[in-house]
Amino acid sequence: MAESFEDTNVYFRKAAKVMGLPDRIQRVLQNPERVVKVEVAVELDSGELGVFTGFRVQHNAARGPFKGGLRYHPTMDEDHCTALASLMTWKTAVVDIPYGGAKGGIDFDPKLHATGEVERITRKFTQKIHEVIGPTVDIPAPDVNTNAQIMAWIMSEYSRLHGFSPGVVTGKPLELHGSEGREEATGLGLTFVTEEALRRQGATIAERTFAIQGFGNVGSNVAKHVAARKGRILAVSDHTGGLRNNDGIDIPALLAHAKQHGGVVKGFPGAQAISGDQVLLEPVDVLIPAALGGVLTKDNAKDIRAKMIIEGANAPTTPDADEVLHAREIVVVPDILANAGGVTCSYFEWVQNIQHFRWELDEVNSRLKKYMQRAFGTIWDLATARKISLRTAAFVVAIGRVGKATVLSGL
Ligand code: NAD
Image (cartoon, rainbow, N blue to C red; front, side, top):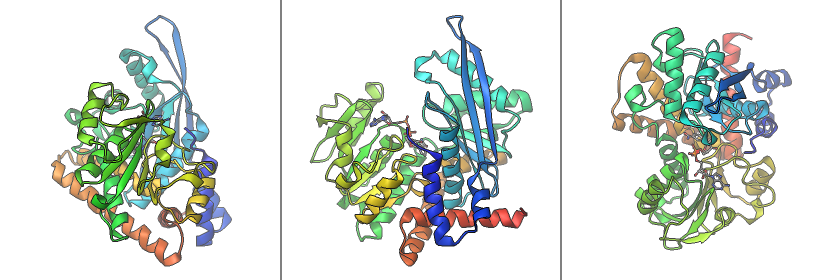
């Protein structure tokens, strides 16, 4: 994973320049408000002591409580967390939900630990950060290698210390105050954004071909919804390798295959095996990187053959690559707009929690569509009027909203 705070700030500064934002305001908006680093020590099943480092970076809360995921990954560190926290500030502002931005996590790989160990690590981490999170303060959610079960443990531990508090985390299981639609929301939101971007070019998903990197939560759900709209997905990949079928991969069959084979695409009989990296370079209309940060670089950007890129992952494009893609007139719908469906649905979950009320799936999805379409329209119109990239336009809108809220609350 290659998200760096400096990379995010390159995009920030580009937008700040377009806006003529004074230096001191830039500094206030770029720096995180609070960085929390904690030791998470637990007894492992072997009897040994496991010692990990947990982080929570709270970037900006001018527009509402801090909001952002928790990632369990050995590469988690402060810079990484700060980059992702700052992206959350801009993302929640782009889709105009009343939150700021945060991110956190622990530097370990839960796949290498028994379930009981992951639970103990999660509960210990919650004990260490419970004073700086809460339904009106900072609301974590799942991210890479964390899931609804982990959110349930955090809710349980936090509620033990503070009383019943379902709104302390989102992305919870449906049976424990989660929301209908949350699981698929990022993939569905990406699909709505793709529909809107193609509509501006007079096209539909059914008329276009796609390649998708990653077949986890985001990749598999965007594949499902694109295929349901008759889009032809010619290539997909995950960490086990890539697949290609020039007639279009049968996505329902691939979803069933992945379900039976530990979530992976490898061995699917309905397509030719290709290398994972090749999927990024396939001759398709739309490329959706939905796995890792930093996969589109200055080395491969010149070889991308797609005409449109919809960023499913966070920070999949390095600033160097972004320049090359812009110069080549490849339309890039940036992460802070394209993958904001997940946090938007998290907002709906939180709203239901604090009202102690439940919405039907149709209601959740129709609200999600409205938020995504409205955000896309605002960014597209600004990019067209100012002749800037969609990424710069998204940052301009976000910085404008966060900046105004900061000034209105009084520096
Ligand atoms: P996930 O863990 O469910 O899936 C990740 C996928 O990437 C898996 O299919 C994995 O096999 C694949 N992968 C790993 N290494 C790869 C490689 N080298 N080549 C190709 N594929 C590889 O994670 P996710 O929730 O789908 O998140 C994916 C990205 O989307 C991350 O950047 C995450 O931050 C971002 N994101 C997720 C959400 C969400 O709601 N889940 C919301 C916004 C952004």
